[in-house]
Image (cartoon, rainbow, N blue to C red; front, top):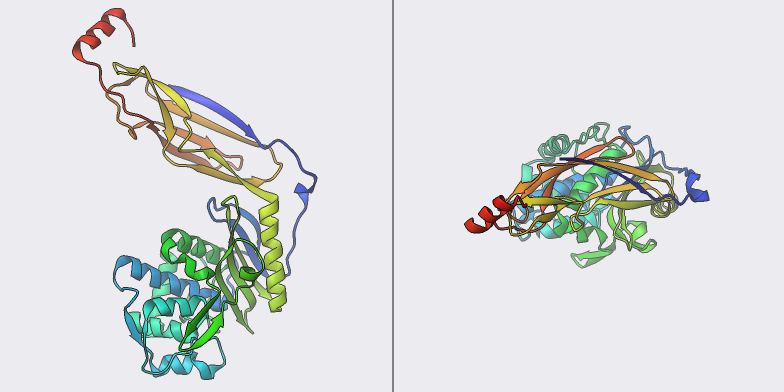
Length: 375
């Protein structure tokens, strides 16, 4: 059996829908974290110097190692003289103020990297996990390739200037998406506004944490080579999460204002529609020789689409199933498929599953049904 459905949504046109937005940022990308829909981009696939925003890859490798059980949060790494010289207090750069010979828990290093942007913390982790920072940087590049980051190569764990240390705005957005989805247990660290270690309290440099409701991550960056950058996330009261990357700005003030403007643009000019909902039946299917004559079936997954507010959205779906289904049927059993085509031409196919169990009729009841020709 094949059913064709056409759904029209969001027909109310709004005058401000057509407004465009610009940014002072040299590179930028604004993306919906759940759907991957890009609301704005500017040179998003050009390799750029990411500065400390590349510490997100250092963090990803830490979190992956913690989740796999290779290390625990209480695993201690020792601060080497090299880590202190390259990333410690006397460098004048971002630091966790670690001391030579000090043993530091991995969870504290993770916090020091993301809240304090500690270069020394990055080097301690790199040496502890890979022996040398160079070997760790090679692991970062390998991991980037596995995650599908097409313009990322790493020369160090810190983001300090190096001609071979590069990422694109899209890569940073995709990496952020992986951090959010793969390691949700560690994501609250990115919204922590301050962290105290060795008696020194430092604040998170992410300006949106202090100026935009729902902001909850991720990482700033700045060198003279890269300019001012920010990879950030915000979660709206309705549950939408946006990911923003900007880089190449000339000041901290520009970084804050441009990021805030782009986030507000994404929140006010776009919305998410739930096209398929695992809690809503899409069709009822007849059941043969069951204790019930039909069952409601549901999509196996939610399907959410981001689109400009006020824009008419037409979604077409094709439902396929064998009619009738022969009892017994188990709740959650695959009973068909639904193929949905979105306005941009993207096609999603997913299973349809039974919303309830239906037992097979007993012998005499089946005989009666056959005699009466009933289903």
